[in-house]
Image 1 (spheres, rainbow, N blue to C red):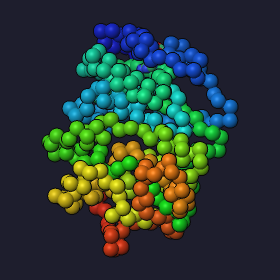
Image 2: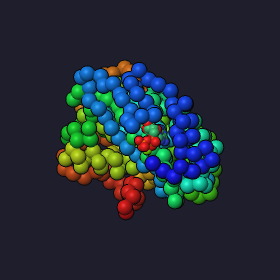
Image 3: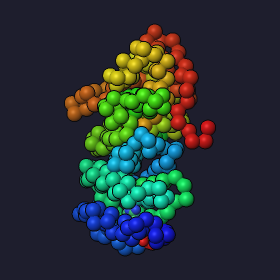
Image 4: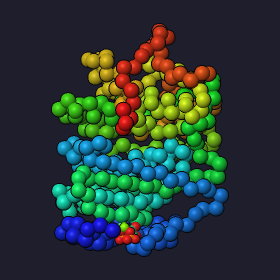
Amino acid sequence: MADKKLRSMGEFGLIRRIQEQAGSAAHLVKGIGDDCAVQRQEPGRELLTSTDLLIEGIHFDRRWISMEQLGRKAVAVNISDIAAMGGVPRSLLLGVACSTKVSDRDLQEFIAGFLAEAQSYSVVLAGGDTSRSPGPLMISVTVLGEVEKGQAICRSGAAPGEAIYVSGTLGGSALALHQLQQGEQPSEELARQHHTPKAQVALGRLLAQRQLATAMLDISDGLLADLGHIAEDSGVGAELQLAALPLCPEFVVALEQNPQLIDLALSGGEDYQLLLTAKEQRLDQQPELAGLLTRIGTITQGTEVIVKRADQTRYRCARGGFDHFV
Ligand code: ADP
Ligand code: MG
């Protein structure tokens, strides 16, 4: 419970407004308004849960992202974690702590973006908490989802000899952030990739239901760091082929002018594409996957994650992935 004079419409006015707009879903027995939400659970499925914090000044900068985009991103990055396990996202919980600097209009834009994005994945807002903050705007989003019993795709299942794949293209989000930090305006497409990424739910589902992936995660900390998570949890090493990375077209152009930017593609995060391992050739036999995945390397014995140039000499990335405490 927070300060009742949070803002002109007040905490409860705000909650009422969220409640009016939140909608309903077949699995939601009771949504916003009671002490807890009540959710129906499908038999034969396991519950997936994940939480993400978004702190102003750490995860986002209000000079660059609109409140509507922030609402969308808060939803997409959370749902991406469900996609990365091969699950179906169902419900969201939203914690908001904001100072008086955040206007009613800002909050309404945020909620509008949040709910529109949630709806695009058929996910419903089931509850949350609202408080005043003495400092930065803080958003905490929890997602609830489900997956068939025993079918969640963990980070720990990769084995030597398996192929490494990535969905979509890489580098766009990191390039947009790099340009913003340099005081440049990214193109509309790059800004879209950075501010409103999409979660790869349909692809994650396909991989889980056909049991095609042995390990999987979504790329949020950076390709090398996230591949490092799979390697560590699986007790394996990995070899990435630099020439095979599916860089987004604008990244390829930028790279021609500044070859050092390649480290951004390896270490820059927030692509929210799926990174996975699979038995060789298993994925090539799936017509539905054609064009969705690119093979970028191989799982090896040992523990090292290394990058190889086209001539098979080793490339050493000068930058690490994102880590809050480094
Ligand atoms: P409590 O005192 O039990 O924490 P609140 O007054 O904080 O209850 O919340 C009342 C209802 O409104 C609850 O169902 C809660 O889940 C919901 N709620 C509060 N804040 C939010 C929010 N930011 N987004 C969605 N639902 C919210
Ligand atoms: Mg509360």
